Length: 434
Image (cartoon, rainbow, N blue to C red):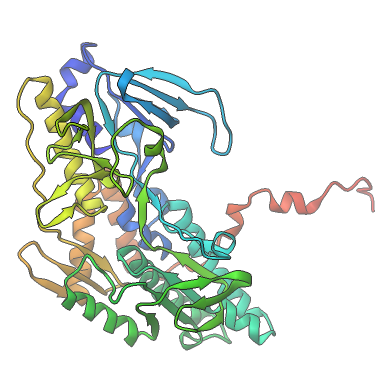
């Protein structure tokens, strides 16, 4: 969306004169701003306010709500399927002159027994809302049941993966659940058990060791059970089995253990690296088999293997993706005007995350490190500025302001996920008079 937005601005005279056309193919008719999903899960932001409708911000583009099923760059053709999710229609063939490949990434799962049946993801607005409802439903269940084993299982929350997504989601939900527990006569915050499982020896690999150590200490001060150098071996029957020998029941399992390139890339004739990402030059042009740019195709974001002087390739995160998208649009415009493209030069990442209301960790581009309330304010200011729509910035800011004036809303609306459940439960009574 960011690349199309910039192209729409630079090519507007050509677009309106009919000399160019930009087609955006995306299964969802909106962009999701992923860095704020943790606050959606905690109820600090309305879910609709972290999505940006594509047709509203791309009025000069042709937006197709469809899935790309195959790309054949040798003949400059793409096949798209506009059938609803879960259905399969007849793919439509589209031709193109220039191609921008940016399908992003999907959750990287593992063949853990029971994960598919009981695991929850955290990569979309729907998953964030579902997780919030699920956590609140577990508090209701624990407060109502007389079965001590069921109560303990309902109050145990396991997160696998300690990157920014996992740490931010756990911290925000722990803070929300701690507040929600005050509304129950037979629950306290100390009854809740939070477990963070990480396969490597540290959390927040994107951060400096000092800031990661501070975050680890804060989580443990909040009684979060952080298991480093540990993996989840099984989740059958909602019983968590860890590689360190631990075994306990938990009704909540959240999987945030990294991402992998979109599977769509396997159905293309584009050159991929060993991890499945599109091989790119620093200019974001796709690298051909002969080491030269592949004519007419560009890539950016999580799906692109873009060289990084400080590491082998740029990490798959939102900050790189947005910066690459802007450069890609400028380079594509430069090619249309017969100017040389510029290389992508990654800036120092100014990463940050919220750890609940008034708490956060962040570092600045100058190498400074912030914790606590100052980091929390900086985190919010950064993402408010990066939201790609003025309308959404105002709405998110309003959510934050109202959240500071009133108490938190901690009501589960899990029924909205299954709107037909009550109707189906009513059945079809053939004797209404009874």
